[in-house]
Image (cartoon, rainbow, N blue to C red; front, side, top):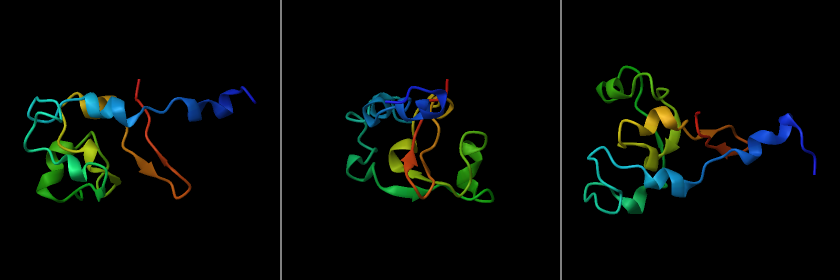
Length: 99
């Protein structure tokens, strides 16, 4: 195994279990929030465009028109500064913690 900085990114990813522990925008765990649809939380969605009214509260946290999963939407305010969006580079989908 090669142990260099060039390969370290692959070991720094956060799990979905960590993302699921954050509360929803209603201040509740996902399991307790009746407005959070767990059956669709892993669907890939596109964030609102920059000119859409729905994008205003996301300004500074999310890129407009970016693909991510529904799990990352409608979460508590501390969620977005802590997590990067899941980015589909064509080769793989990655999600990392922002220190």
